[in-house]
Image (cartoon, rainbow, N blue to C red):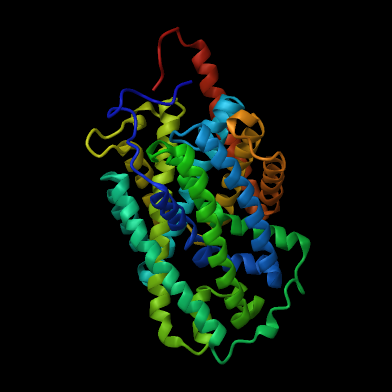
Length: 429
């Protein structure tokens, strides 16, 4: 089944992004989501085992990144694992991956929008969240290069803020490194649950793969950009997590509504609080921008194959973006941002994204050496890790995630049944 909908300029996207832009988009998606949204619930699950959970999540993410990079180089088109699963495993598995990604990452968009609101104006968090979604949808609408420029500015600011937090925690008079008795109160199940929640933070490299049709020289650019973005993010996460644990301890971090704020206060540097709050809002904006970008591209790919309304496959003749898909995604996210809960979205999103990467690893297993297959252990470990972490998540996340995947599978079956009964040559909506 083809992946394009017409001649260049009408159904295909323009290749404008280089390695630096692709890395920046990945960083914008990962940094911020992890630091400002996932650390506290992960600490609640793992306690002092949080660094162990971070390591587990990073190993699974590395396997997923490697499998995704090899597949993206082989299939440099929008859609990510939706395309890989379809081409390597069959139409159903590609569809299921795309469904899990679109639904899970739409929830992530809402979580990031609400994070912007919570830090920028706590008393009007939902209103600010909706405004942020509208504004960033408009930025994406006028072109992917403008999105990359804005994300580049965001990624420049956030690491500076996080570096200030780490320095304050490690040099403040109240820091107590002796509290870092790693794993003393952790359980095996708790470490895995926290790893699943932290995986929410590492999933930003998917934005690079789903932009495959807009990357210059994808066979070279994508395999370089994904590991670079992941490695930089892991270094940032490790430094911040260890520094905040040193000041707050596992219990303090687990109960913190705004852990980085509380960490700099506890370190005796309260003047940094406004800077941290601004940095949190900016980081969440960067994640939201990249998330909307990636979800709209997977929506485009699924619409091209009529798994979603075909009207969403249109590409703007001037701006070269899937404008209808972007507007549809923005509208759904705006509704969720007006009604959703931040923490509740994280586990649900993680389940959907882990299912997505399970399909990616299974797809990478089928590559031949001539197609750039990774070492066999990589997709095996990645697939097993995705399944283990998905079912180690909180029970509510597993139940709701499984229900949503089942609904998607049922919709696929119904669509196929209707298609078989339709007269030849007639297409559905």
